[in-house]
Image (cartoon, rainbow, N blue to C red; front, side):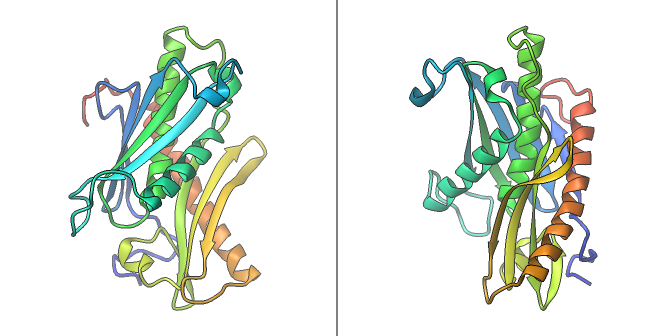
Amino acid sequence: MRADGRLPSELRKIIIQPDYLRSPAGSALIRCGDTWVLCTASVEEKVPPFLRDAGTGWVTAEYGMLPGSTHTRSNRGSSGRGKEIERLIGRSLRAAIDTARLGPRTITIDCDVLQADGGTRTAAITGGYVALCLAVRRLQQAGLLSADPIRHPIAAVSVGVIGGEALLDLPYEEDARAQVDMNIVMAQTQKGPAFVEVQGTGEQGTFDRRELDRLCDLAEGGIAQLFAAQSQALSEENPKGVRP
């Protein structure tokens, strides 16, 4: 039994509140246990210089932890770790969208960690997908897109090994003492679940192929539940900026 009473294959309680803010084209507050991340999607009618005249769009991300999100104050501004996480979020969300159909515009997903208790990057990807879909929906409603550019859902979760046991969705207390720590991003394609990215580290040792397969299977089961939570959030009628 884990410290919070969950089973090894059990996610923390997931709550996704769509359109949490009034101003952005799309937004979502995702709560994974005591990790809270606010994801917003902003649209600009321009693309980075390397895509100029390419006729295609771009999706990028920024990530930051608010000063009061942890027990010790986090400094504002980007860090090396933050940049690495931003690239992961951007890569993951670009896998969700056909940028050619998006047209020559950029959607930036800003992920601000309000409260951190492990799994902030995976929560940012899962909530960022919802914010991205809402922004695309607004572009369609405005007649700015002729076809839906969303290809398939994207979600992410952490898994790890503690004392030889594989565990899903690690809070900070577990993450800090895991022998193996992984972040897994998956897509729900027409052919079924598919991996987008797998980040795995033997923090205090190594892991073999059998353990890798076990962790991937565990993540796939958890991500299936995250896809369902995303679908539920996107089906909810919630006027922008009205909090449930």
